[in-house]
Image (spheres, rainbow, N blue to C red):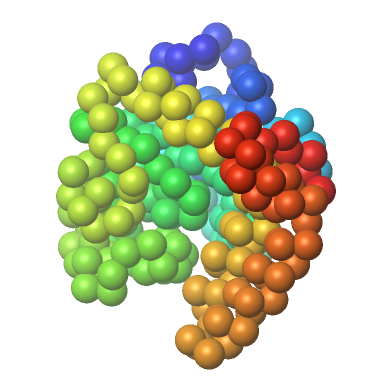
Length: 266
């Protein structure tokens, strides 16, 4: 399956598993994969299942059709006005983004077309991101009188404050090359090479110890919110726990013996 091509399915989310990598493809191409309640429900369900799946080591989030994700579904929002609906929607979105950050598996965004508003938030929430050179990013809520406050949370943790504020205050689209310079994405490749670049990166990550990946991902995000002294204390505790794991012993022994390690996830 090529995520750029709209899939022949009515499901709003598609899943394909290959070599320990779960590809989750947003499948609302006619709506630029806008995050409807149904799509967020489907994505949440898959992430919850993947969290406990020992055979899945890496997740890729992609989009079908001409865009990665154009944010929330504004037509759906306007069809369900009122505080109760709005609070439920943004609470659902927050839970989804937190699930990506807290998932004990690395998550890679495969970005083409546009990633705007909550779509840009989705990219910023993923651990890694690879984009086509034609991709563009924006938090354009300010243009319609709706500041991108929830996308701001992920964006301001992914890039510096000044560029984040410029994106939020202007709503301007920025090209993939600029997004990489800012740190929003990791790599920019020609669109024709996007799938191969994502597959290669996912395979490299999937080859590592799944236990080590889970320990490291959790530690990365937790220490980032601590002051320096607390971060070092916490990191030392994590390193100690990691050193006591069988995979760490195996990895060190394999390195010393100049042989490939055999991971057990323990």
